[in-house]
Structures are given as C-alpha cells and as structure tokens.
Length: 379
Image (tube, rainbow, N blue to C red; front, side, top):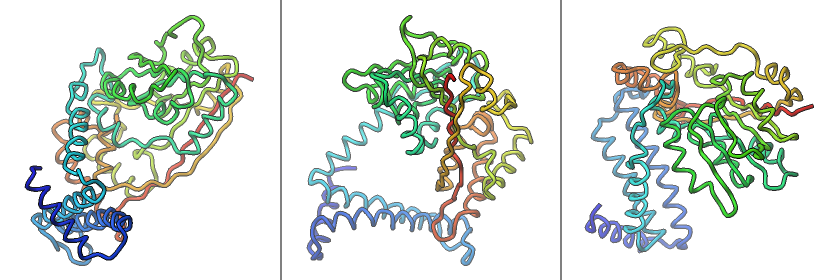
C-alpha cells in the first residue's frame, strides 16, 4: 500500500473523528469491533455468491464479495490509524515480519530421508492445529511444581504446540520430531521459547531414537501429544525408564480428530473424503492408518509407569469452513499430498458441504470434543 492510500485513510479517520462525540478510547474499541461486523458481511456475501443462502439462493456476486473484503481492509486500516499515528510504518514492519517468517527458506519443503505421513503438512499444522486447553496446561505445570529447574521432553513435537504452552515452566526443553518439515517450522519457535537461563534443543529424529544430551540428563515431564499412535510404544516406555527422573510424569494426551468426531458436519465430511480416497483412513500418500489397538491407559499400566491418572477436559471449538480446510491440510489422512491432483475438486466440494452445515446465525461450524490427559508415574 502506497503513501497515497494511507493519506486517504488518515483523511477518512479525521473526518469520522470530526463527526463523533465519543471519547477517543471508545472510538478505538468500537472501530475494532466493526472489523468483525464487516467480516461477517463478507462471509454472508460468499454464502450468497455460492448460492447457499437458504432463503435467497444466489443473493450476491463475486464482485460483491470483493467489495465486502475491501470494506474489511478499510475498516482495519482505520482501526490501525486510530491506534497509532504512524499506522503506515507499523503495518509495513508487521508485513515484513510475516514475509520473513512465511517466505523464508525454512518455509520451503524440506527433503525427507524417509517418507513421512505428514509430508507437506507442517505450515498448515502450525496454523490450524488446536493448542492445549488452559486447564491441561495448568495440570502439567503442577506436575513439576516441586522440582527446581525442571526439564521437559516433548516427543512427536510437531511444530511445537506443547513447548509453546509450557516453556516458561522449564529450565530445559528438548523437542523431538521425525518429520523434516515440522522441524523446519519448529526451529522458528526456538528463539521465542528461550528465556534467561533456559535451554531449548530441537532433535530431528523419532522418539525411539532420541539420545539424551548428557549422561546426567533426566526429564521431569515427558509429553506425547496426538502422537502416541505413531510410536513404538513398548520400546519407548522401556527407554523412558532410563531417561525419566524418579518422580517424573509421562503425559500421553490428545483429542479426537475430525475423522472420528460424531458431529453431523464432521461425519458428512468424512464420507466426502472416503468418496475420493476410499473407505480406509489414510496415513500419508502411500499408506493406511494402522492403530496399535490397545487403549493407551492399558499400555501405560503394563509399563514401569503403571500409576495412571486420567483427566478429561471438555472443549467446544468453532471453525470457519476455510479453517476446516486448513486443518485437513495438516493431517496425515486428508493432506494435499494424499489427494494429489484430486485436491482442487475435493476442496470445492468440501467448502460447499461445510457452508451448508454452518450455523445460520454465526456462519460457523461447532465441534464438541474432549481433550484427555493420561498422567503416568512409577508406583
């Protein structure tokens, strides 16, 4: 955006302020709230352009959508101008940071030494995967409350959601991840995770292949989030007997994926995926998903960490149709690599299906899920 654009924004802001009798702080708050209003009108225009408005059918054109998106941008620019007299410079600096983050070499595909079921999913994983619920974070932090300078070992770290939630609690954080693309994304987190006196290490390898950084190193909390089914569980738990401190907790945790949810829209989406890829759940572009079969609590109970406590946290999440598509792009069962040249056709049909299932009032999809944490200790 050039100087002329921002000059127009400044004139528009001054004109609006000249007609308002509200205090400055209230104008700022209302302007930011108006962004949501304009975004809602853009969403309504998309639904109308796709002919999915249940009462009006094709009520908008794509030119209308463009106009509504321009209104969202303009409203956001005015809000930024009200927040900062140097809005143009603030926007330029922020856009530059985004470009450095998302257009840097680390965002490019990273060659894999062995095929990964998550090939090409890492950028979507970072953006669209849900983090840990706040009560789960608090539970995990309490497990090391009595430990001075504790160490976290996060296995199957993905792009780093668990360390991002917990890093302030730990003096040392070791992240272990086999997928090269995930590692490239996680590397960008490391500078943000390291505070004074903290050490963060990233290990590109499978959980079973991890080697502690020193002979005296011990983990006080081991976390495995949404990844236990990818791991040789018995081998790992045997190795954790040596890696984990005597009072360490092993946290195996996760929730249902969109593949296994019972929500009507998720079931309809799964059927659509199966119509393209077959009935069996995929695990990357060249394999099928083969779960271990034993309940995780039983696996832990039969290990050295047999004192198992289960915690369940109910969650309700809201998605836009485009966020659901982003989430699917992060999975092993419905990534773009799995669909190959069928992706565009699937994406079009999936968006129509999801829009049809959106709540009429909010334009969103609701997901009811349970985040489960199994904390296992030595007896």
